[in-house]
Image (cartoon, rainbow, N blue to C red; front, side):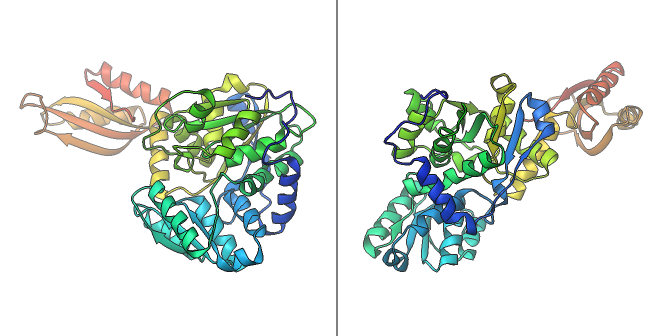
Amino acid sequence: MATASVPAPRNLPVDLADVEAAHRRIAPSIVRTPTLISRTLSQMVGATIYLKFENLQFTAAYKERGALNTLLLLSDEAKAKGVIAASAGNHAQGLAYHAHRLGVPATIVMPTSTPTVKVVQTEGHGATVILHGETFDAANAHARVLEAERGYTFVHAFDDPRIIAGQGTTAIEMFSDVPGIDTLVTPIGGGGLISGMATVARAQPHRVEIVGVEAELFPSMYNRINGTSLPCAGDTLAEGIAVKEPGGITAHMVERLVDDIVLVSERYLERAVSLLLQIEKTVVEGAGAAGLAALLAYPERFAGRTVGVVLCGGNIDTHLLANVLLRDLARSGRLARLRIRLQDRPGALFNVARIFDQERVNIIEVYHQRVFTNLPAKGLITEIECEARDRDHLDRLVTALGAAGYEVSPVEPA
């Protein structure tokens, strides 16, 4: 890969002039999202962290930038015939919204498994949605068929110089707001965002290290660049970057421009989503939190640096968000479920509850189990869900229960 001390290579599909032109083109019609320092997260990680709040775009994602740039570069004839894309995510909504605003017919092909809420949101932005196939690949193939049959212009989610230039405008604004950024930590799915941002970073007058981030479950660009064959599959919180095959154009640009790619586990993705809500009071989806997840996973890698992180999307299901927050509370010791073995006699549960009261730990739920257990008939298992101040507070409770003769085991989250 490139080293951060060298200028951008020549003869790449996108250069700084393309990104600057894209920014002039789209600036009147997108949100100029802020780039703000997070003092609390900076203290936690040991670096100076600046967050770019792209989750504040109208469709809650940076994808609007590339979609709009592409639309504005179409000929009048192409605009009249309309555009088509295959997407079940933020690209669909960004393209649909700006196409409708510009009077360009838009068709979005989605897999039949796409959640209804995403279909409704995309239709709400004025697009025609066609559900086809069980997988993204099937939907994409059908979109290509319709492109040929009906004369639509296909708008790729990432592997297009117009898209890449549009996404790179994110970095134009970041360096304008904070010229001293010396490290960019950017999520990678298909590679459009990091390709555009790296183009801008390479043109800065000072050294800027460019680090990409992928979910451990979907290391597709990592595999392509490093010649590895790690599996790409699984249920990741970062569904927006769960790409099995990166783009050809973007892979070439990443290989030439990006210094490193790191992989993050689901636990760090969940932690990042939770911290952004608790500390920054902002809702970010798993893919959008991947940059912060990398800082949490590898703090020594970024210690002392001035880091720019794009919160690239905020479209997360509310039930999923609630689950992430509860799991984070459990891992931090503020929420716990304790499995306690009791003898089935009067006052047994009362005596346990009294210890909770003495330690000032709040009981939320009690689950009593007499039948479905391998204990003797006179034994029972009680699981108590409780709320403590922190891990130390919870540990004091467990110690007190043990001192009173109870057999206690925490039910740990995954």
